Amino acid sequence: MFLNRFASRLVFAFLLLAAGSAVWADYSTLPTLPDGGRVRPENRYFDVTPRIAPADAETTIIIQPLFDHVRFREDCKYELTYTALDQVYSEKSPFRVKPKPVTPADNRLTLNFFLAGEQEHMLVLEEINADKRRVMGEFHLYTVNEDLLALRPFKGDFHMHSNNSDGTESAAYVAGACRRVGLDWMALSDHRKYAPSAALKDAFQGMPIDLRIYPGEECHSPDNPVHIIAFGHNAAICDLYLDAAEAQARAEVGELKEKLKKVPENVNKFHYASCQWVTNKIHERGGLAMLCHPYWVTGGAHNIAEPLLGALLNSKFFDMLEVVSGNGSADANAYDADVLQASRYAEARAGGLRLPACGISDSHGCESNETFGRNFTVTFSPTTELSDIQGAIKKGNCTAVEIMRGERPQVEGDYRLVKYTLFLLREVFPQHDELCVEEGRLMIDHTAGNSTAADRLKACQGQVKALYDQYWAVGR
Ligand SMILES: [Zn+2]
Ligand SMILES: [Zn+2]
Image 1: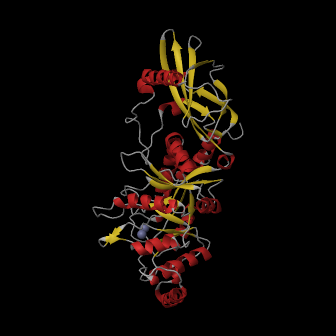
Image 2: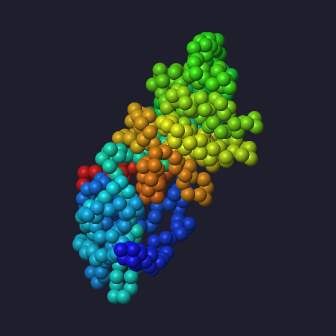
Image 3: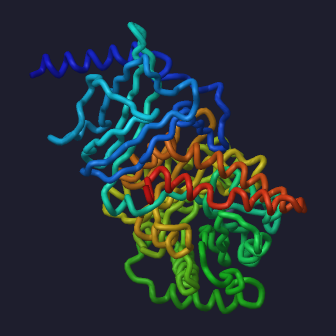
């Protein structure tokens, strides 16, 4: 038993070695997308459908070469090696590890495979011409249970600034740049300002764009150091605490503070009550509330005092935690924030915390901020409608992604979704993002007054949905 398994692994190791550069290629010369991703060559050379299929079901997989240099030839034989990443197999699973002959017809390969479990699957296709073997491609598929199969992954960011507060670019430029870096939805969150985010969609009124633009705001209630993002709300929070409204806001916070029970002695009760007040107001206005960058270093200290952070994590005031932040500080320990947030989050979850993790850029300049387009949230939802995106976050159907330059992605969230997100970042989002680059450039052209942008955007409209329909084999 041991020997057999060992021998088959040895065969597979040799196969991979023989495949050499084609399988484990260094793609460093390929064009890099804004988030650092690259489209793998075989994902350009071939159409493979579906990419995402139901778990524990039979699926018809079609592999079709698109170019002459990879077309199936009459004088060659073909072999396929199948492996499942988690090694979850069933009686009905296809042959494993050892290559098996396959026969293309009409320049396409049609395979009926039973794919077990929620996991990634790999198919290595080889061409055999006399005694020469050549790896034609390594194709990756992912199978998910029914609940996840009905949802689509959408990239979004809802913490960023325009020149309406302390950002560099105007709001419409920021929206175009969001599409250019591959986002499906976004919200501006200027400091103490709601109006610019709510008005932003008007800048593209009647334009054929697929980016969804929603309201947002970074809230700073009086004398409260805690920054709170409101996302998708229908009226300003800042109007409730700025200028003439401030006295009323302070009085309401004071009332909440008087009623507080069970707050540990060393917690600043005014700060705590102020967070309760802000999050109440956000919820009353249909928004979600995010606890921002607790470990951001400002004035030589973390943004939120440790006792207050502990109390806020236990408070149930918030809908999500900013686990991946934007490194907005120039301090030497700015880069420690995300590591501390991830570690604290993991520990709190182990203790029973149910607070979804989000990733954002906190960009203050789309052309200069190193986290813009590299830190984002992936939501798993039926559509990009606001209620679907908010619903996905509330249910924890989201992951927080951080891709530092030159590094592989870090992903936070439920293990099941982290595993799926890693697959999407390699095999789906690069193709998705390429389409977005084109659209984002045209949105920026439109903002600059280019009158041809509308027609060119019209030609692009729906292309990401078409890609997803193909990858999920919708209507096949
Ligand atoms: Zn902030
Ligand atoms: Zn901010």
